[in-house]
Amino acid sequence: MSAGDDGTGFDAGRRHWLGGTVACAAMLSAALAEGASPDPSRMPPQKGDVLVFPPEQNAGRAITASDLVAGAAPLLAYPRDPSSGALRARSRLNQILLLKLDPAKLDRIAARHALDGVLAFSGVCTHAACGVSSWKAETSRLVCPCHGSEFDPAAHATATAGPAPRALPILPLALQGEHFIVAGAFTGKVGVKKP
Ligand code: FES
Image (cartoon, rainbow, N blue to C red):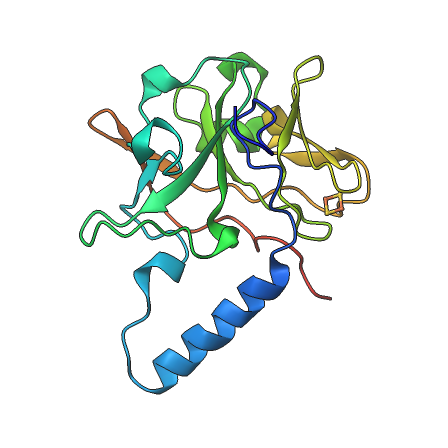
């Protein structure tokens, strides 16, 4: 287990990255203004992207259904562009939590987005954009360690404790062979929503 890895597969050591993300957005805008192609590794998840492990886990291979155990801690995943092979990991807004739950326990919204109980959520806290990097197995809650917000994945990651003002957005999924691919954009704004 690496430093900062709490065993859930999350990187709990890299929490303060909002400034970097804002800088990335500015660079992307500048590139677009100049007519340059955007860096695919900084782009948000695109339809058809394959969900993969981070490079330091399982050699960054594509995640399959057999990697997921119902009720277990989420896997940390990133989208990978299948055409260029670019891992979209240069924006931490692309940090994704992939987990499997009992389909019978999902609320209506979660059930609508689940693939045999498998759901993908943004791994960025809606309070102050820390990484949601812990898992509370006793209550099946995703936890943000910065200020203690908790999210219930069976209830489409509704915030159930702490200061987070809203649910973690869902990333729609589809299956392509044995791999999970992105089926659409996040259902809401990732991270902090300005008034
Ligand atoms: S940033 Fe997650 S609880 Fe504050």
